[in-house]
Length: 99
Image 1 (tube, one colour):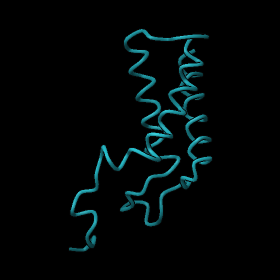
Image 2: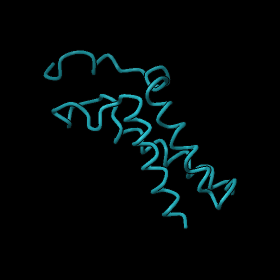
Image 3: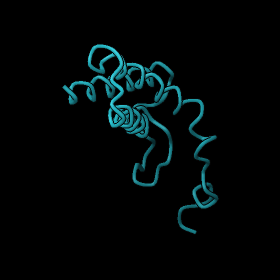
């Protein structure tokens, strides 16, 4: 049952992030890319929020399925509009990689 809730959260967060015009994957080279995308960090934040709610035994309605949908939407909106305010870029990321 919990696995289904996590899958719902992942799919909803990706769909809402794509609807908000976030790219599906970060720009290349992906190893040094810190751009926001629908895959990372959106799904990670959505699963973390859902895990936090489940850890305090807050399931809401339909055994957590409605909560999974809500957390997916909240995570996508957070990454699109508030992520850079909460987690600003470090000065070394803004400069050249080879410095």
